[in-house]
Length: 177
Image (cartoon, rainbow, N blue to C red; front, top):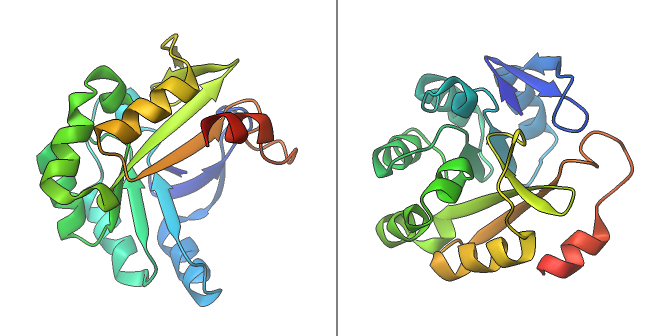
């Protein structure tokens, strides 16, 4: 999770604490042969801004594994810019919830393999805006709809389990899969 130029760790999508500089962390992950990296800018959407293209470009220069980037992605131009600077896949969340046709538009332009839909779940409902806004949507129904619209991957996040070291929400994973 990216907040400014730093990676952060929290609990329940809250209480963020810095855990290191983003560029340095990418170098460490690369040296440890991590097989994929997902970077989500948790400030972009709440601040009403787009992705930090310069930072993602710097991270991509150090990253030789598949790189998925999300946070503040609101347009095909945002996706194109992120792919141009080295992202391999794009994670959509709040804008996809606001405008589901954006998933299809993105998948048609860049391919399903490039589009990941992030599904944040709290109390059995899909959340938007980094887990702060309730949508009332069922996670199974939303994940299935996102896949039908062209999402090649679903990134499933349990707000209640985030940062708690209690493991995966297996009932949620089973239900969605």
